Length: 220
Image (cartoon, one colour):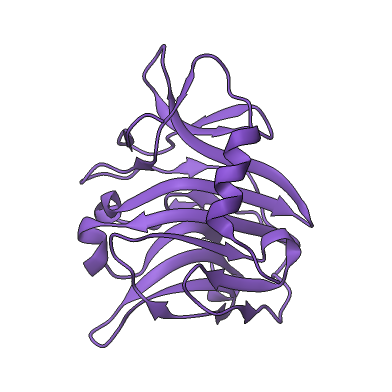
């Protein structure tokens, strides 16, 4: 199954309707120090999928065990996330599904990438510059942790550290079965100046759950 993820994101943006007070911007990111993230409120099951459009910049390139999006319960056997790993011998990006790290590809810094994890229940994991990897197991149930964007929900606690300012979020989708149930676009409320992600499927503006305000990219 082949997807042109960036093209899907751009086409989707052309069809979506935004409120008058919402101004889209290119991306959102954390400040250089501090933690900010979006809590989607979505608890994944075996038919849940993610599409994520992002870029690694700055200090994040040298960080260890940094999540981009997703959640995990107390055990490693409950992974559902995108992230990166750094050791003395490798710097790679992974996707976690249950107890399996589905892939490890070389880190791409200052390159906009897209990835999907079981997108539209495809049972496939892929970054835009990697081969497809089959998902052979079922996602552990029951689960209680919700999916975070721009970080990861780790048993109710945020996992990423203060270098998360090196992660830019351009766009995200959450699917259930073959249906897109959430489409998240970066932007801000022109009346209050609050920055976040607008969900055009649920017509909801999600704002920061952390302690530091997001930084936005250029208006679009």
